[in-house]
Amino acid sequence: MNKLKESKGFYVVISVLIACAMWLYVVSELNPDSNTVINNVPITVTGQDVLDSRGLMITKQNIQSLDLWVTGKRNSLVKLTDENVTVTVDVSSVANEGEHDLRCNIALPSTITTGTVAVTNRESYRVKLIVEKRAKKTVEVRGDFLGSVAEGYQADAFILSPSSVTVSGPASVVNQIDYAEVTLNVTDLNSTYSGILPFEFVTYEEKRLAADEVETSNSNIYVVYPIVMVKEIPLTVSFTAGGGATQKDVTYTISPPCIQVSGKEADVSQLEEIDLGTIDLAKVNGTGTFRFPIQLTGDVSNESGVTEAAVTVKVSGLSSKVLETTNIETINPPAGYTAEAVTQSLSVAIRGKEEAVARIQPHQLRVVADMSEQSPSVGQFRVPVKIYLDGTDEVGVVGGDYSISVTMSR
Image (cartoon, rainbow, N blue to C red; front, top):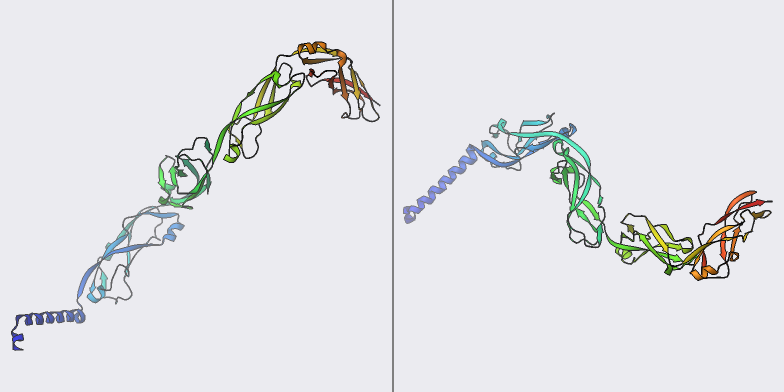
C-alpha cells in the first residue's frame, strides 16, 4: 500500500478524478453560461396563400438556411438542434412586386426553460426575396421530328394528347412562351410511333425553357406519329367494242398516268392498278377525250391530290362514212297516245374496214324511238333514238347521241 502511495501514476489518476469531479460539479450545479452555433437551420416561408391571392409569387430567395448563434445555460444549449429550432419568414405583408428584406422569426423548442437561452443578435437574421406577378395561360403542344423516315414510307401529322398545356409562373417568364414542343428522334422509321415524351417550352424568340422552370398542368405528352406506306399506282381504263372498232384499233393516253397513294402496308402493298372505268368505242369518232373521277377503296389516301384523270382515245386504221336513212319508227307510246316521227331523214355515221363500209346501204339502218319512258302528254318532243345496223357485224354506228322530233297525240 505504501508503494502504491509513493507511485507517481497514482497521483496522476487521483488528479484526473478530482478534475472530472470538479467539472461535473460546475456543469451540473453551477450550470455556467456558454454560447454555440446551430448550423443549417432551414428557413420556412409562411403566408404564401395570401401572396397567391394577390397574384404574386416568390421567384428568388437569397438563402434557404442559416447558422444560428445562441447563448445560455449549457444544459439548455445541448438540447438545441437544426430540427427542433424553427426559422420562418412571413410574406403575408408583401403587397407588391420587387425586392423585399424580411426579418426571420426564430422559435426555440418548448422543452427549453424560458430565459435560459437567447438568440444572439436576433434582429440581424433576415432574408431577401424577389417577388413577381404570377401569370397563367394555355399554349398549344407541337411535335418536332428530327429523325428520318424509311424509304417507301411517309409520316403523317403528330397526334398529341393533350394538345395544349396550361403554364403558370412569373409573368416575366410565362409571357415569353409561345408553345410547348415534344421532340421525336428516331431513324429509318417504318411503323407508327407511340409513346410518352417530355416537352419544352419555346419562346417567341425561339429560345427554349425547360418545363420545370414553371408550373404546368402536365409533365409529359402522349405522342402518336403515324407512318404509312406510299406507292406509285398506274391508272388503267378498259374498252367496249363498238362503232366497228375494238381495242386493237385504238391508241390512248391517260393523264396523269399514275398517282401516289398511302395507307396501311397491308392495303397498299396489294394495290397494283386503279381502274378508271370503261369507254364505249361507239362514242369515239376519230379522237375523243373522256374524264373519270379517280376513286380509291378502303383506307387508301390519294397523296397526289389529283381527283380526275383525262383519257384521250384515238381510233385509227378504219374507214367511215355518213349515210342518210329514212327508216325511222316509234314504238311503245304511253297508253292512250299515238306517236309519229316528225323527222323523216337522219344522217348516221358508220365505221369499219374500208371494204365492209363500202358495202353498207342506207336501208340497213333502222332508227327506233322507244317512247316507253316518255311522259304521257300531247305535243312535239325531241327524244333519243337507238340506231341498228342490220346484216353485218364488221361495221358499227359511231356516236351515241342521236335524236329525232316526235309528236304525241291522243
